Image (tube, rainbow, N blue to C red):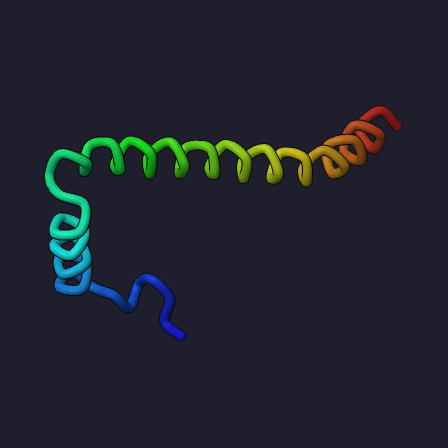
Length: 67
């Protein structure tokens, strides 16, 4: 299971051509904006989860520094 890294440039070009044919050129900016917003929200949520995971470690470090 190679994941998305196994697609490669030719595969991406084929996917983009298929999307262009299915949705048409007028819908592509809307689709691109929606995908961009989705990725931005996902990144923001992921960063929030990572920050939440770091909180207990920061509290432990503060306690050991105060001792």
